[in-house]
Image (cartoon, rainbow, N blue to C red; front, side, top):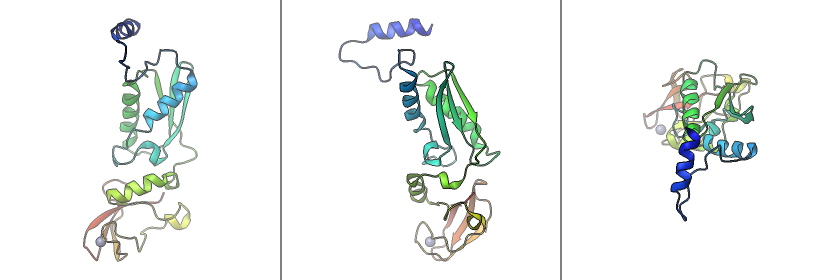
Length: 190
Ligand SMILES: [Zn+2]
């Protein structure tokens, strides 16, 4: 059925009309497929923080072609993160839109994800979104919470304090700025 609809599509294509994306079965080499799949995957966003892509988060570990199937390897931000199931579905849906239907999403737990894997672009996007990115690296010191003297994302005051160890998600802590009185999320260092 896939072959039949593809033939129809090709027959309907008039000169000057370019199909928006090549169909996977159309002779792309495994290497080209991986490159294309990676470009698609880099647009998949995190359901909890929609400004971040899974590439920004650093949870997209590998994309490979294995036995006629596309294998996508991801590492959860923390074990039992409820967003991972949604991310897996989003990955499959995004790839399916471009003709990749044979997709396996594998979870790799080691080495564990740390906030050090957040890209520089990802940290910048977090701040623009009003969430303070993890301070420092995930060293022992970084793990110590509450973190003090976080700069408020709105007024930059460092007169801030933690009001809840767990914010809107377990990845975040809730802080309040004593200067502008606005609460804000802090993406914890893990
Ligand atoms: Zn403030």
